[in-house]
Length: 90
Image (cartoon, rainbow, N blue to C red; front, top):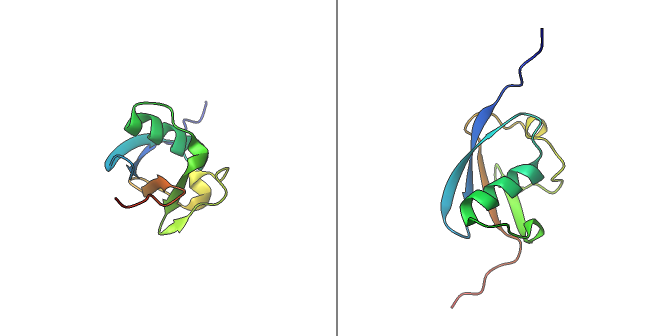
């Protein structure tokens, strides 16, 4: 008998487009993979991932090799992806 990996949905807000995307992930998904997939879905193109930072529970996730399970993220967990540098106000 084989074990089936548990999959669940998380919410990711991408502030560049002020859009929220829902991604189905596994507990072993890394933050870097989550960021890549969310940016592609929200921006409809590939974006340089190193120019963005991921926040979870109010703090920046500094080690993007961390898995969602290690962060304590579960079903419907909220993430925010925003530009690493502040945007000028016009």
